[in-house]
Length: 270
Image 1 (tube, rainbow, N blue to C red):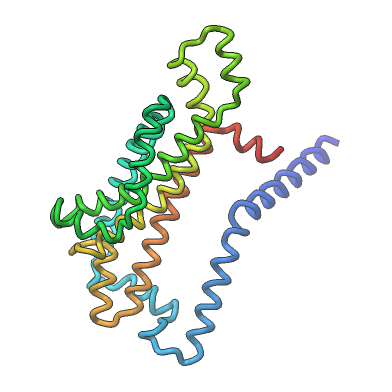
Image 2: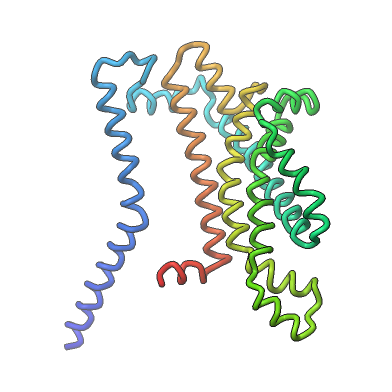
């Protein structure tokens, strides 16, 4: 009897593990496999390699030492991480600031919206003029493109607290700063994390935009160099690395969100 129960538990555990792997990983891999298969099939129809290289040629180019892949990836990664963390700090601070005081909100939000409405690609040459060449202007571009979603989501989350919760706190004569810290900020956490997830992708975009304008290092600089030699496989390889960088950063933010808000996962299951 005991052996039968243990066998049944083992079988149930295996089924649960398989179901978890299917839902978490295999379903996510299917679109990539489909995309890769379609790409490979298209290249079989005598498409010139300089138009669309085959997946094997791209993989081969990723091992080509002449492109110095590691140093180029590291240069872009520095810009992305720098811009991302500055965007998180500034975005949350400004979001809390405009949510704290209605006068500040009415004063600052129009300017912040105006500032964010400026096309960042058009502003990139000006950033280069102000901050010169190298790493720092690309960090600035990464920050400029990625901070606003954090600001907007933080301000919205803090403002979306149900009035019943605030009214309950008022009955206990809770000070404004305590209501803000103990009620509004925790309630806004899902909104803040949504903004940070958006910023994790936009920070990569910002760094790449900066590199395209003026940079000797980084994946965008590698794309421009490969373009001059019509090395399309290296260009595609660089694009793959850029996408992987954004995916990894997004995944890490998603992991932090699950650690900070374990109740959100339970709510989804309900």
